[in-house]
Amino acid sequence: MPAARIYQRPKNAMQSGRARTDRWVVEFEQTERQEPDPLTGWAGHANTDSQVRMNFPTLEAAKAYADREGLTYHVIATPERKLKLQAYADNFR
Image (cartoon, rainbow, N blue to C red; front, side, top):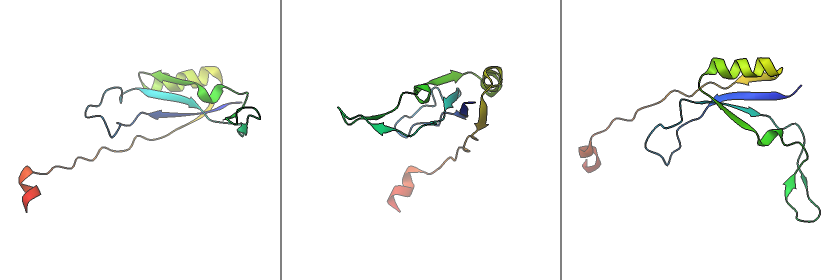
C-alpha cells in the first residue's frame, strides 16, 4: 500500500506574497532506493510515484482523495507564521 504525505506549501523565502500557500499537496513517499544508471550515472528508479505531486483546495479534499485511493498518509502540520515587526528607525540604533 503506497504511503503519502499531505502538507500545505510554505511561503518561499524569495517571494513577498503568499500566492498558492493556501493549497494542500499530496506527495507520494519514495519506497525504493535510487540506483545510479550505468550509462549516464543519473540516480533513479522505475517507480515514478515519487514524482507525482497533486494540489487540493482544502485539507479535507486531500484526505478524501487519499482515503478513496486507499493510501496511508500522514499530515504535516503547517508551521505558524511569525511576524517580525520592526521600525525602519531600528536600523540606526
